[in-house]
Image (cartoon, rainbow, N blue to C red; front, side, top):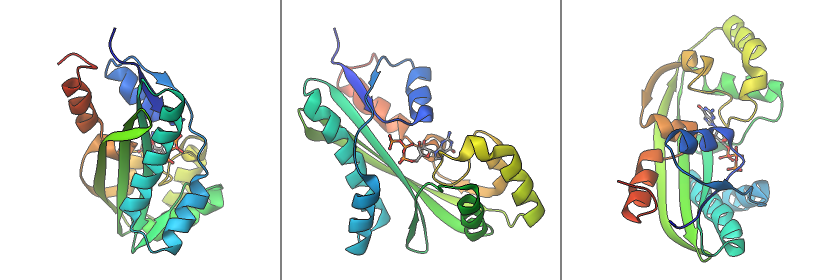
Length: 199
Ligand SMILES: Nc1nc2c(ncn2[C@@H]2O[C@H](COP(=O)(O)OP(=O)(O)OP(=O)(O)O)[C@@H](O)[C@H]2O)c(=O)[nH]1
């Protein structure tokens, strides 16, 4: 019997990525006040990657404390542009305003993943992808939101690369899975090395 694996994330796409890779795991949603942690770290001038890393570790640690024998994966993704961090837009208007800021510019999508065992980190990876958005028209932006708001409201950038969101982009420099929210290839490498999955 291999070591139990738990994904400490409510993110549907993270669950899909692990399931499609053939992994057996449980899901435990972490209770972490992300907004408070994010704002406190930003107030101290913490760089976006440190914010994502800290939140991913807190989520993994919280669940690992309850299940110390398991390997617990915590994740967090932040969108950064010009030193500013964007969180998931709460409303369609916020999503529109956010996409207007990202239009015709390059932003970074930073995905952190941390694995905890016995409440302590045993692995971590921070993936960064440079995302260059087209200078799309207002008409397209409104039509895009009409068609996609229901689907994209849980995505930090108000887009899903595997859906129509791909049409917002001119260029993507980095790993596809990291955009979706998980540095999957590095995670699989670690789990294989630990003997949790066959290699
Ligand atoms: N399907 C999809 N989801 C995306 C994409 N880009 C970002 N996301 C999602 O945006 C969300 C970023 O917010 P997070 O705070 O990291 O995660 P969450 O969804 O709140 O879930 P927790 O891990 O429980 O915090 C994640 O669920 C990512 O998977 C994308 O291109 N496609």
